Amino acid sequence: MRWPEEHIFVCCLLLFAATSVVQTQSEKAPSYLLYTRRNQQSPQRIEAEVESLVRSSFFALEPIVLSIPRWQGGDSSALEHTTVVTSQLSLRACNVFAVDLNNVTDEQLIVESLSRLILLLQQHFDVPLRDFLLVGFDAGAHLAGAVGQLVGQELNQQLPHITALDPSAIGHLKHELSAADAAFVEVIHTNGENLGTLQRLGHIDYYPNGGQIQPGCGAEAASCAHERALLLALEMWSPENDFICALCSSVEKLSGSACRWSTLRMGAPETGKDQEGIYFLETQSAAPYSKGAYYISFL
Image (cartoon, rainbow, N blue to C red; front, side, top):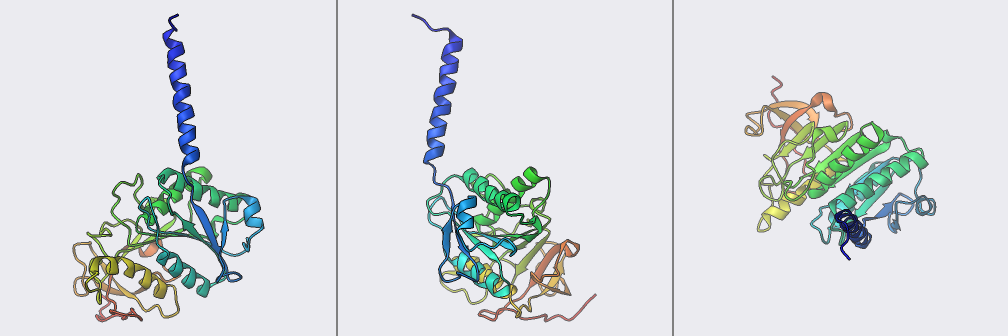
């Protein structure tokens, strides 16, 4: 018996759909480690579900920080999480969700899972969007941007703040971080044209020591300079922040003599879109990294 062509076509569609469902179900989704001041030494692994949050140390009246690490379709580093958790909980009482991307290989699944968590917190726990901060390191910066874009589309309202720490070149990623992804996007470049990128991506882009090579980095210069963004952020979010910046006309002119020194401090709470631009600063080779300003010329 010969089947009609339309029956064959429908069967092929059903087979494709069934295969897609099986593949989706087999993909590992991100999970989350929740840190608060009540459990900083013993983080709780949670899922993006109401019951999981209710049973945790989560407190809806405290701000939300999502820490999104480097991602290479395999293991992710704990260094960025340690930096974000330590600095943010020292700064204020908050809920830090460290995103676990170990063995997660699907970019879209990551973006959808993080967006679902934000919508869950906003809709079921009445957490206002103004209380969210997304911090992304390496490829995690672009993932943060993709999450910001998706949440903005769902709610017709932007997330308030993304901090990107030495974003990688976009590479195989589907979404590249941009200033359109949140109401305020700030970017720190420390290893451009290597593990990071020099490309301007935010409202404010900071280029410590020119954004490519960092003082004190020896044999492992690339990874050292790349991860220096984390150490600078740790100090940036502290009372010791003395990262005085100079406003530059372009990425091609990043130096203390070519840029105009200002009173702006990298990542200071009062910094916003009205200071939009490209900024140069100099740092020490070891902590404390901030140097202040060397060219006191406010022209």
